[in-house]
Length: 163
Image 1 (cartoon, rainbow, N blue to C red):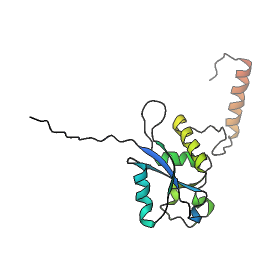
Image 2 (tube, rainbow, N blue to C red; image 1 turned 90 degrees about the horizontal axis):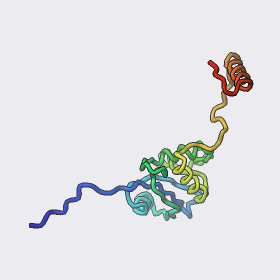
Image 3 (cartoon, rainbow, N blue to C red; image 1 turned 60 degrees about the vertical axis):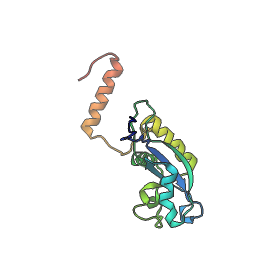
Image 4 (tube, one colour; image 1 turned 30 degrees about the vertical axis):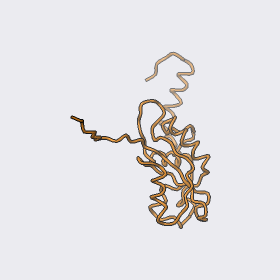
């Protein structure tokens, strides 16, 4: 008797992809960055074919961090990383041609730079390399005094303890 070949699971590889739309002038300089668990070319076609838009796939990559743990991420994680690195979006540049729902996935960056940023994100888990404070903060007088006292103590006692 022959055993039935039943497949109850399907291997899914989450992907981040990017495409441009040559010929659409208000998209000049912008790149669309999205997430899919299906074939990337199929997903891009789903987004563009009914509008008669020619899309050019710029790059794609696994949406899994490179540390060997197999932890996946979504496009919005990468989007936040890009924004934190100063990459502009249509709303930042007063480009009103993008619809409200489209604005979140389009970025004003070259395909090459976005790809490099993607691979940096995958390798560093989205930790920014900059030491520039995101939000400026001024210590209160008593906080500043406590920091100065602690610093002075450690300069005089390199192996000391300070409470």
